[in-house]
Image (cartoon, rainbow, N blue to C red; front, side, top):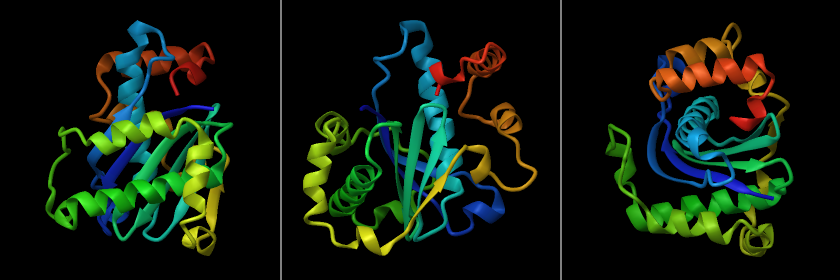
Amino acid sequence: MKITALFVLKCNATTTTDGSDPLILANATDVSQFGYFQRSSVREFIVFIARTVAKRTPQGQRQSVQHEEYKVHAYNRNGLCALGVMDDHYPVRSAFSLLNKVMDEYQKSFGESWRTVDKDSTQSWPFLDEALIKFQDPHEADKLLKIQKDLDETKIILHQTIESVLARGEKLDSLVEKSSDLSAASQMFYKQAKQTNQCCTVL
């Protein structure tokens, strides 16, 4: 069981309709399980996938999106979105209790200042880096479940593929081509991995 990345993003109410991308407020990533030369491309793909799923997570909704052997879990609370990229074995309830905690801590630390953010933040947030390490063990996240009563109130929507979360007519390949998160090298890496059916090594 592994958490590869945790994000906090700002998702405007109009993000899904006006085409604007969510803004990254904080992120922590661990790509140590990938080969050294793949890591920068993998990091870019994680950001791309995070924005793609966050953008398509309506306010008040929790959803899990399967992508190869990974699940991307997202929770949008009034435009503040917490998102985790985890392997398929990480329990869903544990994942969402962690995302709940991340949002609570973010709002405790930064209040409503995120509402005025207009570009990606590059500032590190120590809590998220620590959470990425501490909550590799889902039992740590399970301890949070005892405190959080509202998890059962919101239904978790599970998507079998990342394509199923895209709008009608949208294709992952064309989003990859248009993405400003992906360098030309990462786009080429994605295409080559797809051709050799090794997307799972990229994410």
